[in-house]
Image 1 (cartoon, rainbow, N blue to C red):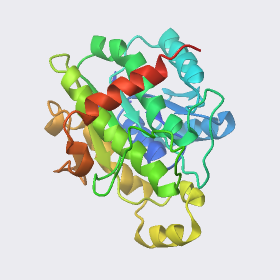
Image 2: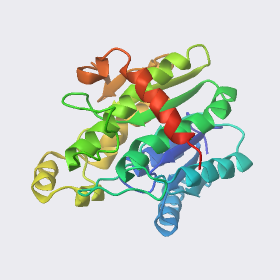
Image 3: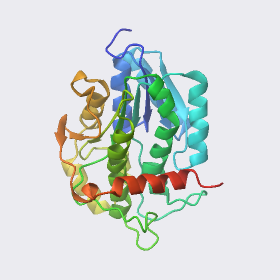
Amino acid sequence: MKGTMQDKVCLVTGGNRGIGFETARALAAEGATVVILCRDAAKGEEARKKIADETKNENVELLVCDLSLQSDVRRAVAEFEKKHDRLHVLVNNAGIFSRERHVTSEGVERVFATNYLSHFLLTELLLNTMKASAPARIVNVATKTTGLKIDMDDLMLEKSYSFMSSMGRTKLGLILFTMELAKRLEGTGVTVNAMHPGIVKTDLLAGVPPFLAFLFRLMARSPERGAQTAVWLATSSDVEKTSGKLFADEKEVAIGGQAKETGLAEKLWKRSEELVHAPS
């Protein structure tokens, strides 16, 4: 099949549902080879087949990975690189909600491990492949910065855990990651941007406290609508040279609040490096 993404290789985390599924489907419809990364093999295969059938694109693949575990991220990257020596688009989308605090077998709070740290590590491990494939693009699914907080002295929320604080620090983390990575990628031909999808109707809302889930559903947009800016950032010539920015509804929005704190992005980067390279 022909399309604007013909001969491009794309990887979408959480590509079996919600925004990730719609992003993967849109990229496949444009002719890309699309790899969807997700934890559940059965649900992943169901999504892979649906995307392939609906887009008439046979080049849709499944990569099974538990993003909460760094060891599995490393295994998945090795598996990806056995088959592909190019990667033109990486969409860091996967995320979980949790009302209670849980710690992974690797000693990292699970929401932080899944939503932020896995994408930091996944991106780091794939950067050489992306640089060799340039021009290439990284898209981080985050949110607007209003009210977001991250406590560098309590990243794992050991002192005080809540649903909102657990989510807020991971989304702010992805924006800080976007800002710092953009600096480090200058001149490489690889860009990185973050996007705010809005409140989206997804089964992830099952993990949200009931009163919030009710309010969110009243305001929610469809997953397809939520994915539009991610697809635009991955494909549009309008942003082919743009990096280190935050977008919503295909328009740049200001990065403010704690995200503008001098040195915070670099500080989080260094702490993230320590966490992903800690002795096993």
